[in-house]
Length: 114
Length: 115
Image 1 (tube, rainbow over the protein chains, first blue to last red):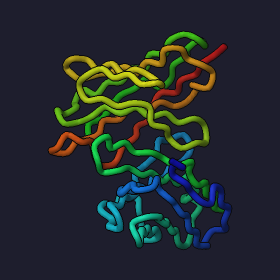
Image 2 (tube, rainbow over the protein chains, first blue to last red):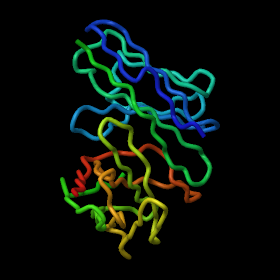
Image 3 (cartoon, rainbow over the protein chains, first blue to last red):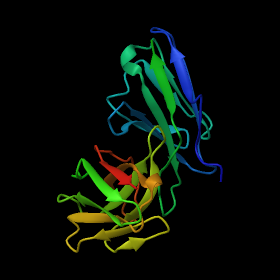
């Protein structure tokens, strides 16, 4: 079991550029979640997928944010026209749908917008 | 999801038990209590969860009061590596009794273990 993998771990980008983060969930986990965490705050829910279907989106997920999980395996989170307020850690998590439905998190992707 | 209340910070001496309280007075009958921790700059780590009964695993014990309105996470022999933010979260279960859905994090408790 290799755990939830996120890439890149760190990204520095200029304001206005687009960035994309990738998440590889634990093998055979059907559910995949994206969270955002800013300094001093707990993680905030952004969206989640059941297989390839995006089932819920937070109001935090503005029009500049888009998440996909095209084949029900890995997922990408894209931020268009980045703003300084987007600087945060973006966390991916996954869980099975069987009993014992614990959510496991990756190490996160740090974004700094300059 | 029910809200939880945790102390902002706690201290513990290395080798002693760390007892982290959590209030969840509005918890519903179908909501589980979950505990995660987050060590600086890392992703949250699952610790333990329970519904009504006390639970124990290799990391910790979870004590849930009979009325389920509060719980305590116990780290039996705290080490310096247990210094982290600890989050208590309630999470709904589906009709089959399996917890599902997103986790809603609060501010958590900053636990500092000192030598």
